Amino acid sequence: MLEGWWTALVLVGVWAAGAGGDMARRMESSTSSTLQWMDVETGQPLPAGALPAGEDLGAWCRFSDHGVVAGVVQDGVCHAPFLNSVVTAEKYEVLVSINDSARLIELEWSRAAALSPGGIEVSKKRVLGLARSPDGVVLPGFIDVNSRRAYMLHDGQVERYDDAVILAEDEPVQYELDGVVWDEARAVTKAEDEVLLNFTLKNDGTEAKQVSREEEYTMTEMLYWGNVRGTVKGLASKVTGPGGQVWDMVTWGVNNDYRRMVPQTVSLEVPAGAAVDVELVGVIHKYDSPYTAQLTAVYEDGTRRSRPVSSLHQHEYLAELRADFSRPRNLTGGKELEGDFPTSEVLIASTTTTTTTTTTPSPPGTVSDTEQAGSATTQESSNSTAPVVLPPPLLACCLAWLVRLAHP
Image (tube, rainbow, N blue to C red):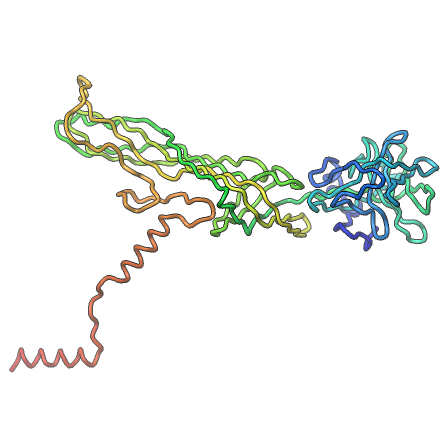
């Protein structure tokens, strides 16, 4: 393996023996979420994140010359092996790690094994590769899958090798986002009513009575943490908000839509021989805010790489649930009844002022108001008047005095 010479990347050696399944899995795809080829011309500075081929070697580059070839940048010019000669170009592409997010691994390659194409593509049938010369020098170049040859640069000459390593992107298995800070000056909060359910409470008796009915409604929530450049969209992620709120099941870079059925009982006193129509209404809060945070990429081998990121967060959630009541109507003729009747009842709220005990979804990264209200209630209870407890000696003295009064 070619170790100890990378300056900007972390390399992990993957041996063919005993790791065939892992190698096959990694070589299934040559697409990249963290790497990009960028145009450069001689005289221009290399873009930020340009990846060197190794210590004392230039950045990886490629250009078209009887097909696309790859090599390294030397003195602003791309040098690449082609058959038996070194070709050069002043207009070429440089391999860049997007936002310094790339992590590469080595995959052993041999002409005899003839592995299927994979790794970082130079062209459809060519991938970036490295070899070591007999005197131990690390050589950059590419591997041609069709000819099953590794073409490498060595002191201005082209050398061919039957054994080399393919460079491939190592994608993380999970992201962890923490240290989130909202940009409150640009945050937007909206609230909208949404009708979740309609049903009717009926009383066909001869006296007014309390009528209860349990129905299920669909509770929805949407989370989005942006699509940060240099990250893998769709990766499983864990997010910790500013207030310690944790989302364990986040899919990175896409809208996360959660739905679950929730039972809810609605109870109302309905006049005799009447019916009341009920609308179950949810107040949906929508919170949009730019944010900054620390993003950690977790890899299969346990390696963790962290970097600062900024993106857009969106959160839609049920903040309040209420039941809106129509005026009672006669069951026979449908005529509305005269009198004062309840028009609505809050079933889930951010305060504890209703008769229904509930838990309110809190705004992102904050402690819910129901928890705050619970803490306030506990504090108020602790300030209430407690019974006086006498010390044991004084209590004994008082008891003796009472006995003497009872038996003079």
